[in-house]
Amino acid sequence: MSNPEDLNRFIRTRRSLYPKQYAEERVSDEIINEILENAIWAPTHKLTQPWKFKVFTGDGRKVLADFQSELYREVSLEKGVYKEENFQKLKEKPLMASHIISIGMVRDEKERVPEIEEISAVACAVQNIYLSVSAYGLGGYWGTGGITYFEEAKSFFGLEEKDRFMGFFYIGVPNIQREIPARRIPKGDKVTWVEN
Image 1 (cartoon, rainbow, N blue to C red):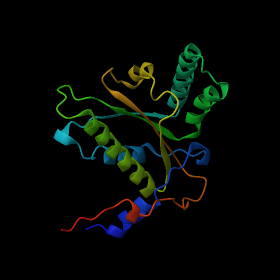
Image 2: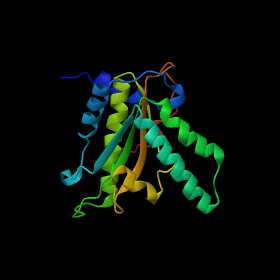
Image 3: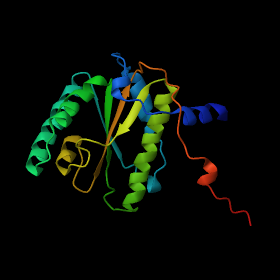
Image 4: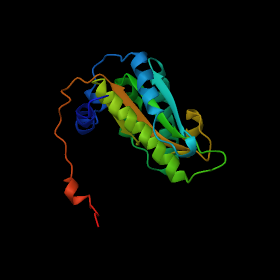
């Protein structure tokens, strides 16, 4: 049997580490495959397993960077909200990570469960990714900026209109100490026990 203290430690020391905090070192594809294997064991109502991942690494990171920066430019110019610094970030950020995993929610054809339950299942899969990244001593974070909410982005990630694109998970080898102080509201302020 596993040690619950290990699980407690992984959960409580999990932190988001960003691409600027990654070394120029590649994580092995074998580790990424193990992390994704853990992801797909997330709970899912009626076993719809709504997650869909696409992994960008090596030169694939540039493919992602070019796609998202150009799409951002096109859509934001049309809306009159274009910012050059946002374009540059979208062009450069993927190149700082070892691997980037796009996160999609594929809607069950029969819509057997409410959409919120499908979104929640994908979020549970992402939590499995977070904990796995922590267990491997890697850095990672789930980002939902840039083109995440652009309908025009969906097809690039293999998603259809009824599906949801839920952002990216960036993974890299940290170039800083992982022990970063956390900020949490005490559980007593968030938890109520009913015993009678």
